[in-house]
Length: 244
Length: 266
Image (cartoon, rainbow over all chains, first blue to last red; front, side, top):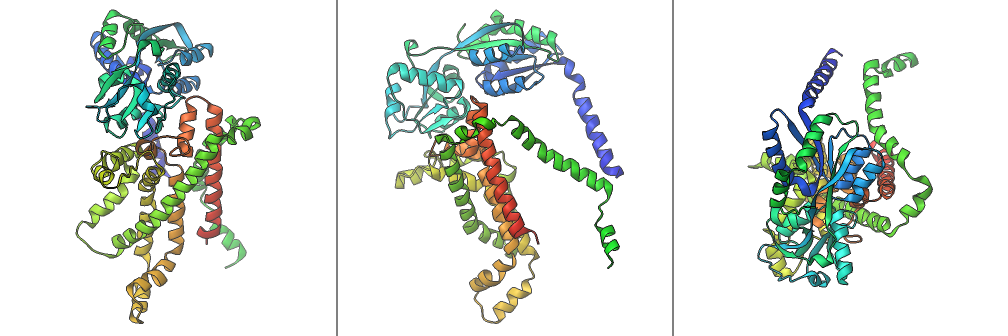
C-alpha cells in the first residue's frame, strides 16, 4: 500500500503548491463574447500592474452565473446580460456597485464574399438557404428573435447554436449562408457583416461587478477600476463595442 | 475445497475494499446531486414537453443507427487489425483511437471541414447529388458514429487476438469458405465481447454532445439530441435541464444494467 499512498501524497502536495501563488491572481469570469477584447485588456492591465496575473474563465453568461451561485471563487464577473447580473445581485453575491462598461449590437454575418447574396433579415425566411441563430435561451439568440419580431419576419433557422462562437464557426466555414451574431464577432471573425438598423434592435448591455467573499478583493477592485477607465474603453471600442 | 476455505479466499484485502468503496462513492455522488436537485413535483409536465419527446426519439434513433453502422464497418476493421499484417497497421490503429482522445467538439469541426457543404469531400458530394449532411439527422448519425465506433473496434480487436485460431483452421480444413469461417466460427467465439462492444458503443453514442453540435447543429426535431437539449436548457431553465438529464441517466442505466446482467456476466 506504500506506493499508491506515496503517489496520493505527491498529488496533494502538487495541488497545494499550485494554489499557493493565488494571491497574485485576479480571477475574472467573463462572457464568451468578451474573449478577444478582455485578452487585450489583460495585456495592458498586467503591464501596468507588475506581478498581477489576470486569469479568465470564459463561458456563456448563464453558465458563469450558475458557477457563481454554486460558490465559484471569482473576483470579478463580466456578463453579457443585465438580467443575469440582476440574478447574481439579488442572490446577494455582488460586492459594491454593478456598472455597465460596454454595449454591443447584433449584425448579420455571412461567409466572406457573401456567396448566397444575402441582403437583409428578410432572407432568413427563405427555406432553401442555410441560416442559423443562437438558441433562444442565450442572449444573442434572444436579441435576434426580438429583432425579427420587430421586423415582422418569421425566421426559419436550420440550427439554433448553443453559443455565438459555434454559430460563427459554421458561418466562417461557409456551411451557413447567414447568421445573426454580435457586431464584435463580425470584427473578430473571418466573415462579412450586414448591419441591422438600430431601430430594430435593443442593445446588449455588459455589466460587471465584484463578487462577494472573493479570493483577491484588492486585485478585483484594481481590475474593476481599470475596466471603467478611458484606456479600457478605447480598447473595447477597437474590438467593436460601443460606450454604454 | 471446504466451505470455510472458500470464504477465506473470497474475502478481499481491506485496503482494496476501501479504495473500491471510494470509487463507488465517486461515481454515485453526481447521481445523488442530480436526484437532490430534481423537481419531482413538476417532473411529468417537464418530461412530457415536445422538446423532450423529440430529443429522446432522435437520440434513440441516432444511437441505434450508430451501433448498426459500427457493426457493419467496425467489426471488419477490427478483424483486419487483429488478423492481417499490413504496412501502416499501427497508423490505422492510431487513427481509430483518435476520436477517443480528440475533444469531441474538435472532431465535429473536423467533420464539418471534411463533409460539410463546403468541405473537402462534402462540396463535390453536394455538387453531384445535392446532399447536405450537416443540419440533418444524417449529420447526427455520422458525428455520433465517429465518436462511438472506436469502442467497438478496440473491444472486438482485443477479443479476436485472444481467440484460438486452431478452431478457424479446423473449420477451413473441413471445407468451410473464409466467409463461412468468419460468420460461423469466429463471430460466435467473440460473442460476449461483441455484445460488450455494442453496449459501450451505444452508451457513448447516446451521451454524445460535442461532435454532434459542432457538425450537425442544434434544431429541435431534426438534430437536437438529449444531451444538446440538456445543454441548451441549462442556459435558461435548470429544472428542465435536470429533468432531461434524469431521462438520459434512466434510459442509459436501464440498458447498461439489463444488458450486463443478461449477456456480460458469466
